[in-house]
Amino acid sequence: MTTSLKGILCMCLGVLFLALGDAVSKWLGEVHSPLQIIFFRTVVSLPLIALLAYFSGGLRKLRTARPRVHLLRGVIYTATMVCFVWGLTLMPLAEATAIAFVAPLFVTLLSVPLLGERIDSPVLIASLVGFVGVLIVVRPGGGAFQVGALTLLGAAVFYALLMITARRYGAREHLWAMVFYMTLVPFLLTTISLPWVWQTPQPWHWLGFLAAGVLGIGATAFITLAFRFAPAAIAAPFDYTAMLWAVLLGWWFWGELPDLWVWVGSALIMGSGLAIAYHDRRTTLKRRPTA
Image 1 (cartoon, rainbow, N blue to C red):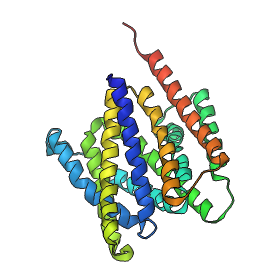
Image 2: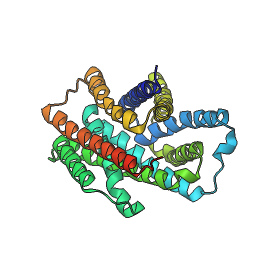
Image 3: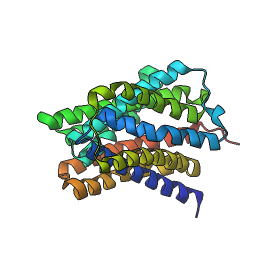
Image 4: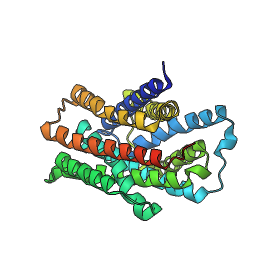
């Protein structure tokens, strides 16, 4: 098996774990507050992250000289998860997944004012096409559907800010330090909120909380491996297999079937994301010095 094929398989498996974790969170969100769901996810995730860091070179990997940066990233990550889990409870799983795909477009646009990067005309056009796709999926109208769509768009913006901070500070901090403190902050914040949002879980809910945490770490691990085995231009497009899993899981558990316009909007969002990735790859290759 070639390394590229290993990367593709890891990406597909990681995306499957993400989709399953989203489905579990949506199910739990029918009873429990997003804050309580996030609390249990981080309770499960933190020891696993520390364990992975230990076997990857020791807990010294968690040392940091930038606690304020990690605090900021943790607050942004908390906002991302709260908006996303809440949005999952308000919208069908496939539509929620389609809107989440817009996050890379926000990364591209926000990198201009926040990182001083320049957007080429093809990237700008592709981004606009992607936002047209979002409007087709959302179809602004009103009611709970509209609230859910706006909440998920908020999650996409917060996620984009999280990725931009990773791009800015990631080279100066170890990967496991970035992941550990990003998870520690929402654990602390949601712990404080528990007296106001606590709902005693049913026995099967405990399994759901455990599964959500394990699936989240599994997704992170496999997606990280995917980019180690295969170039980003090869592995990244398979992130969109999440839409297929979201449709299947939404249909299986909730009887949700997206209509034609959701597919049309999703195709525009995915196409714009792939176009931007292709353009970035060509630009990188042109800038690479020749021997």
